[in-house]
Image (cartoon, rainbow, N blue to C red; front, top):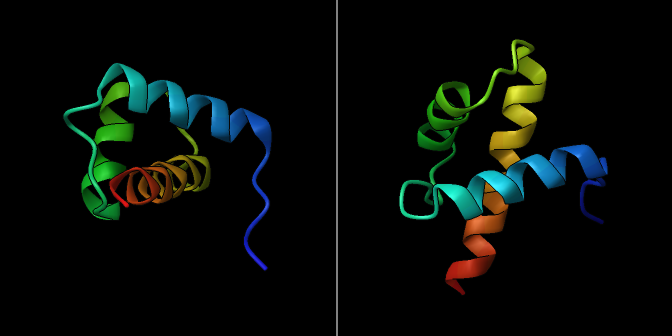
Length: 63
C-alpha cells in the first residue's frame, strides 16, 4: 500500500509541476530546494511532503 497524502499537498505539488515544468525532475533533493525557493512554506515537514509528491509525480510522468 502506498502513502495517502492530503489533497492540499497534491494540489500545491501539481501546480508547481505545471508552472515550473522544465525545472523539476525525479531527484528529491533537487526538488526540495526548488520547493523551498518557489513556495512560502516555512514548515520543514510540509516542504518535504510537497517535494516528495513532486518527485513521485515526475517519476510517473517519465514512464
